[in-house]
Image 1 (cartoon, helix red, strand yellow):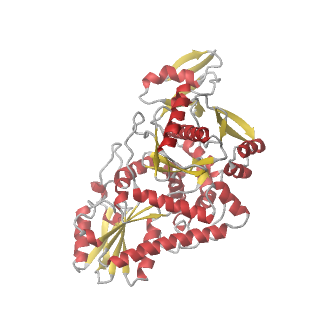
Image 2 (cartoon, one colour):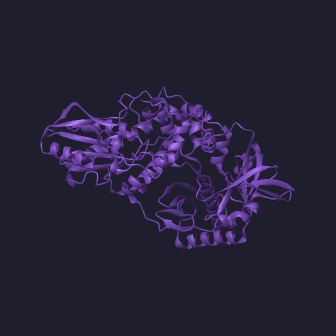
Image 3 (tube, one colour):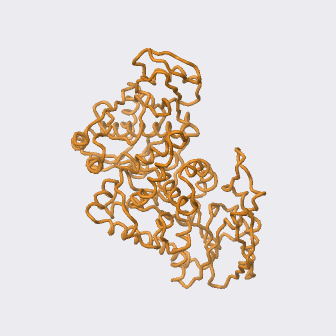
Length: 552
């Protein structure tokens, strides 16, 4: 027998009992499926056997980030396997998991087939067949060379290349009914757990719709986001043109000393996009307020400077304004449910003062602009007077820029709204996407440690709150933007790795943020680290790694 503690209660189970068996006894206490066990502070897949005596065991469900990621990863594995079965020849047709889109995950296809409703029906039928069969998802450790042979036999050149640069001597490979694949993270023990999903055609590809972490027991209707999709597809096209689609491609470019070409082409493509936006603003003729908004660590400040430079080439005179300077005084700042200051909500901004100042400027009046003192928590006036001339234009940066409530008094024709985000289009491999939130989180961690002395633990601790603010105040308005700008670069994670790893290693096993730090360290381990010597000083990445020519 093995003795364990669950919720402070001592329990005994026969030797060889899996965490899955134990979890089933406690599932009634949870309102979402249990997908992961925690044993003495270590993450355990449910298929593993509970071996340690006196171990403390707890469980994670789909409402927890780790549990939810496990479900998404497993459902994606099921989809890829079903596509292979329906196509019949794994080398004949391939599916690539591209990016998240609303409640779905968009997958592109290539090969001797096209996506039809008949094909979608067959894929769904095969997925549900495997769910009903409750087939085991098994994990086995392979030596790197053997793993690469397995991938080669299935036509997975992307995984072959990825593990050419792997430092460890072995890799875990998952199998399902004769199909083998690598999955970056934990998996459920069998297909029976993957019992809530939808598959549909979308554009030229396939959309896998899954429940959300907040509502794990229901499927929400898919809401298309056409502008976001177009921006993501543009980023995908850029990656293909540059020849860096996966981490293996990037590592190969670094080893072959082609990194400078990758950097220069990526920066040129971004500059071209900024120039196009500036040209559109100038053509409209009546724009006085350029509103830039986006989630944390998107590079809003650098974009405002680079856009201002492009606007000058059209004879315009841009002036930067930060919405943060219109924060209400600290004692008036709303608090969240935990009693902490909520700087993300619209009520943290003196909206009426902002609108009155902007209207006065639009009317040709001279206005003394505020500056918010973040140390004292008070708005200050330091003699910064501004008057708008005929060619003057304000470039306003702030998270609420897309929300018309923020600028409710300003004429619509005087506003041009830009949504910016770091929409990572680089994949670990064709079946393992990189969440855009991971790129932004690592950006923020590096920047805040360098400029504010904030430790990685604090950044991770705050991240959930930051994300909630984005979900409430930014993402609902992104489709209302006149233009979208993707600030992510293909090479930046290899550059950020050098500064991020020491910060993450500073988080001890006793800290609640340890699991996330460990996950990010494993993720960064796929990249070969590079310096930033060849990075242009006006690059958006400079806002995070340092050395920018702008005041960021």
